[in-house]
Amino acid sequence: MFEIGEHVVCGNKGVCIVENITTLDISGVDKERKYYILKPKYTAGSTVYVPVDAAGESMRKVLSREEAQRLIVSIPEIPLIEIANDKFTEQIYRESMKANRCEEWVRVIKTIYLRKQKRIQAGRKVTAVDAKYIHMAEERLYGELAVALGMDREDVEAYIVGEIRGRAEKSALQT
Image 1 (cartoon, rainbow, N blue to C red):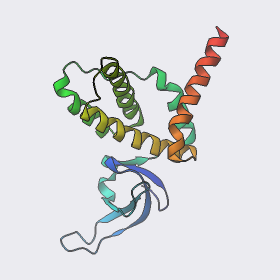
Image 2 (image 1 turned 90 degrees about the vertical axis):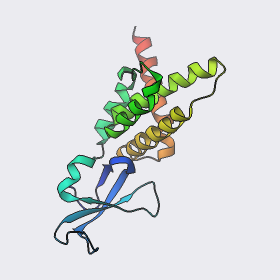
Image 3 (image 1 turned 120 degrees about the vertical axis):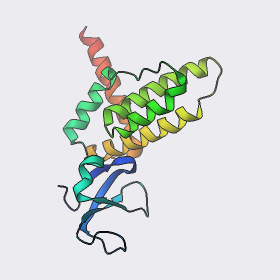
């Protein structure tokens, strides 16, 4: 059970704040069924209604500060997504996004970033599918990490890069 005022991650809506837990007075809706009323943190003017009894499928708590730090430290070891056939690229990305887990979003970002570099070196543009999914993955990952770490979403990418570089340099000095 989530509580009013709590930050949660809700499916494709990203980070939301639980605004209320109540029944809905809308025709065609079970008047006895309780719903979470969610306000997406990064989408103004939007409201999401999630049945309390079905929330486990689409909602989870935002990472804690410690979990966010552990995730950032583990980014270099998180494996890329293997795409054996480009015909299935979007389907594979979609499944990774649907998992609603930060590790999967990192995999999408890392995979697309490297694909993008290879395409640019070959004088080709980034595919529309790659552009769409890297944007989605970054929005969700940076939004959640911003809340977990208590920072602005716009600062998260630079923070991650700094942390990874700092650890790599420290590791290189120790060897």
